[in-house]
Amino acid sequence: MTAPEIHRTIDELRAALRPARQVGDRIAMVPTMGALHEGHLSLVERARVEADRVVVSIFVNPTQFAPHEDFDAYPRDEDKDLKLLGAFDVEAAFIPSVREMYPQGFATGVTVGGPSEGLESAFRPHFFDGVALVVTKLLLAAMPDVAIFGEKDYQQLCVVRRMARDLNIPTEIIGAPTVREPDGLAMSSRNVYLSPEERRTAASLPEILREAVERIVGGEDTHDVLPISRQRLEARGFKVDYLELRDGDTLGPVTDDTRSRRILVAAWLGKTRLIDNMAV
Ligand code: AMP
Image (tube, rainbow, N blue to C red; front, side):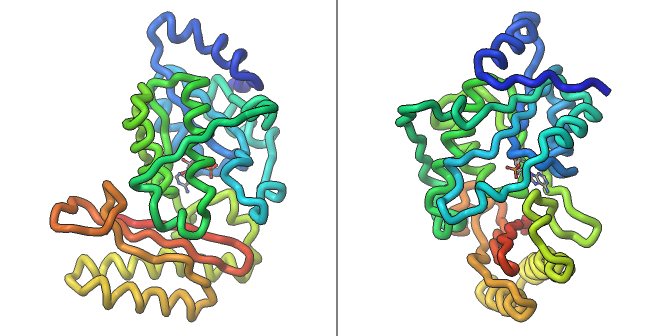
């Protein structure tokens, strides 16, 4: 166990990574917003396999939150995060301030089309501009050979992939599977918002998703299956933002050329918004 070296500025991070790059070490980056859990740590483990040096960034990015969203309330616990990273032998943690990432006069945006259209964007129109901007900045700061993102945020993974390709960012984007609680709920930093009763109900989200996948794989028509799944969620008290089947590569509609399909869902339980997705 080694405590990670903490870098709070981009200059410090670059200086720390320079010697590793000079000797030809591969560098992996795992961008996070902190409040780390086993889902994040699975990305760190994957990063270890892919590279010699692992940088984990912890930055609650204000540009991906709308004014009415939970930026201030978002869980933050730097000491605990650093202990967890130490246990996973992460050498470097990049923990910039908002001012470091967005200095006075900051005036640049990054907008991705294609996979960012619909789904999350229909309900959080600001969201992917914020994600694309911060991921671009993080990748330019660390210049990693690979960056690991969770399939938990499947649309985000597709947007980041598209962006890295379109902008010729020389970082390979790797997607890693969703880590779940024993009852199937996808791990998320926001799960702490759930009351004990909501937490029990939350397990029916992946259960209903799994059942929809099985029925579609079994040959039932999506147009019959998804409305029933939506009703079942609503009957348990979820308010569904979207529940859709999409092309798993483009996130566009499923067509004759579709090679993989994905069901994606976002639903509120009380004041907590949960997202999940599964391959069909
Ligand atoms: P966040 O801190 O929520 O912004 O997430 C940082 C990274 O961890 C993103 O790439 C997420 O997709 C990923 N992640 C979050 N939860 C999970 C999970 N349960 N399993 C796998 N990856 C996850």
